[in-house]
Amino acid sequence: MYRDRSLVPTEAVRLAALGGLMEGGRHYDALADEIRFFTARVVGPSLDLLGSSLELLLIEGLAEETGGAGSGSPSREIAITDAGCRTFHQLMAAAVRAPLNDISRLVLLLKLRFLPLQDAETQEEQLDMIADLVRTERARIAELATEYETRPMAEWLAFDIEQADRRLAWLEARMDALALG
Image: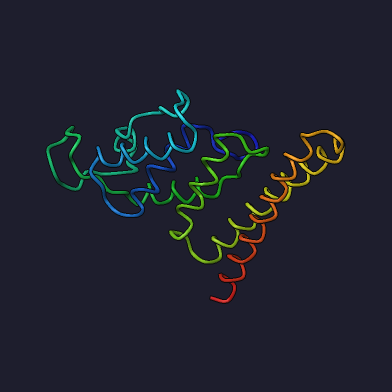
């Protein structure tokens, strides 16, 4: 993790892997394909996200083989361990770095993807943290738009402000729904 408790790129990939296993056991190769698909669609091709092999999760005891083909086979089934569950929750508790860059966006989307895997209180904390991030981003963009209000870029930044407002409304609605149970 970085000093601000946000995830480095390899930890984002680890969150994707452990979150996938939290949803249920998977074939090793299917999980690897899913992670590549998700990260490539969010960030695009990136050497930072090649990360370590899923094999490392097995070596560290965060995942275990549960069946399928023999050891070392890409079609073997793997599942998360108790240690893997704890690590997943630690990674989910990490901060999201502002301003939003490609890696921060990946972490944010992973948090939203795996949000239902957490209890209601933790979900609300996550949504509140994301709302704080969006408010910070919105303020930064609004200040920039005000400073350059006579330039065409201010109109472009207005789109970003509108999007931030829509995201905040969505986050507030989700938090309200959680509060109602």
